[in-house]
Length: 494
Image (cartoon, one colour):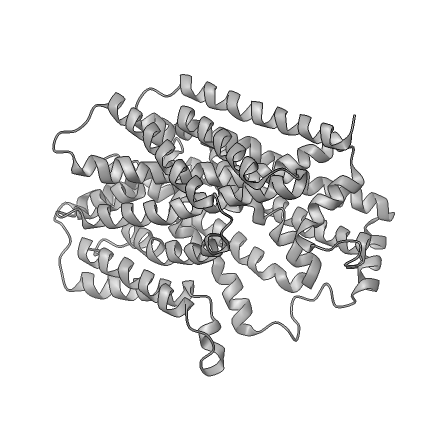
């Protein structure tokens, strides 16, 4: 059989496995809590790997190895910042969010949690949060579909639109049918595929080089400064900006919703250890892949034209075509895991936070499940229409949206969990100010000492905190907040 045939077999096996998980999850989905949050019965292993897979996307297998291959370890600061941010997020946010969302009216989305937690009489928070999620995550989902189409186009020579449609159809199918459980369990499989593929390349690469010391020596011959974490091209502002990516975790709804779904707050400790362990292995594998690439190709453009293809090229060079096919499937898994998570969060914002808020009488659980599945399909169709023509502006929005979500939701979530004095007006004002600062700062360059080159999430995050604190001090929290806050704190430690 040809190499392409083997790769096609691997893709088919992967797609069938994802669909089967979706059908299995369908049999365990009985009400809206099951569909949106898995009935709060997710074990820490699934929650941890699901959060990691939803977070990393194709950047882990292509973007990070490519950057480290091309520029050396000076590009590692963003991975350091993300790892630290993920650890702090599991440590600080997970147990208390799990406890407080149950205390605050058994909220199953971030907007409904903020609404219930702050007893917002005008539901400004629910509307503002739901609309932000709906707009930006629809664009996020669209960018994932673009990435899927480009993947099939570059890997198999398939028509971009056909590849995009295939990725969209499979992802929508298991998300629509199985809901949160399908997304979480497919994320588990996808996360294991990603880390296994990333570790396989450096392990085999070390063996091919004759040992780790020989590999290091070969890379040092290509570039003696490859291992340096600091260099002439690296500024202090650049390092701070890279590390600041970790701040974004506190405000990513598709990641922190996993914290709300674990069985108990105590299990967040185990989830943190598993999740950060997975992340360390994955990042180390990505770095090792870049190192093996430098040793193998010597940064020769005639041998490797696109640095971001280093993982793909090494997989095809070192492994049997069937194994290389599963490694290609790992890239697709990274893309699809993020798309499915964002798709579900977007549909929940549409149904739970906007549609349900408009209804004067509470709809039945069965009706909400039907509406949620319809919302998944509707959001996917809109995203697919946007992705039909390759649009670089959509892809560029992803990095900007990470800062936008991090600066608008992140401080609001943290203040909700750790400060009794936050008011609904203060939260809305802080979210608006943080998002506005990100927009302004992100569109200005230079300044004294290059200050405006600082990643916009930092000024946006700090602005949100300051405005939310200042405005809240001018008002008074709802009288029920104090008692609920104490119950949530106690439950998070139980």
